[in-house]
Image (tube, rainbow, N blue to C red; front, top):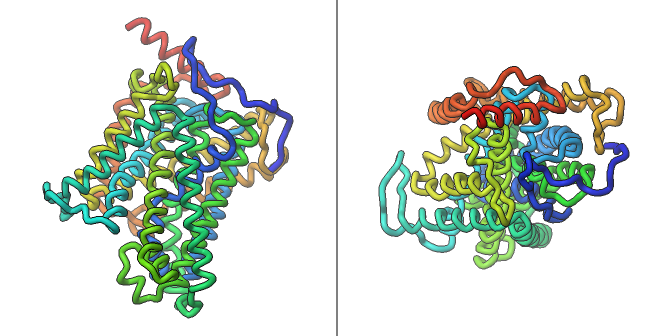
Length: 489
């Protein structure tokens, strides 16, 4: 990466018309933990055993190494774009400038859908994690698609959804401070497991190191996009970061590197702790691995606490990021105007947060299996958004070579374009993996959910003016058109 001259301070917070914008309250550490915490959720606690049995200990670690490198290339693209356009909504702004409002809506609607699915997933993951320590299956309500729903179990997820929403509404400083504390706790427990792996792990448990060759490798690789969702939360909150733009871009890239190292270490430490038989019997392999390494259930429960911390960090980050995207879409007339309202005191997109909080509050009452379809539908949405952003990066490099870029990856030559093309190819490849007859092909139900999301988006898409030309003034021009229509009404 290289940098070009820029102002040492962050630009003023964005405004629309005479309305005050966001508060700039996030520092370097809180911004970094926002991105890292979004990626390091709860999936590793439950899924690490499947990764190891599918590809072997080194096969799974290798898949995350390669997958992490692929996502790092995508993160490089985002790093330059967020430094050049540090505005709330991230993808919405990049695609708007490169491809115009309609493509901007498609990319933004895709990533919003992906974020919403993860928020719903975390509302179900929390009671599942707590259920490892405390029995929550009391007062049976109903069965949905073979998933038993219990009132106490569901209320745990719903109550936390309300708490997370309140934290986000109270202000980005409070949400960022909460995020920083919980991520540091999570990494402290991870360091403890690493120490346990060195002192109590058995190298013999690493066997088999590879399982099913390429098939096993791809079985793990296809989960990478979902496990790395969240580094792009940093661009969503760029107007609330009190740092120079180039530093924001660098932090976005660094967060992916940290998450990749975390996943690789989790795979290796669990492999050292549990043999094949123990992995097959475990519901929460990371927790059972911790208990085995230290020979005490207390340490297993401690790892469950780390998993709960991961749930909260991912949930907090992605609800924050999704709300900023919804806010930006509403400000440009792509979603109802009331979704683009900031709280008069805390300067947070309160209505967007309430909508997302409502989704998370209801999610646990639908059972875990139905929500699995929603999560599966969200994965291709996310990589579609990454693909459109990568294409936008290449277009902007070609069409606007002199655009101010405080952080210019690959220098001023063609190497930056090569990185952008590589990012586009990677994300196109990941998107293709979800299609029928491919390694990560989705079942019918996730495609139904996918279709319903885009059918809902079509209602808003048809009203977006198509005559706005891409360019640096595209968003302002679209806002003028929207405001003129509103005045006529």
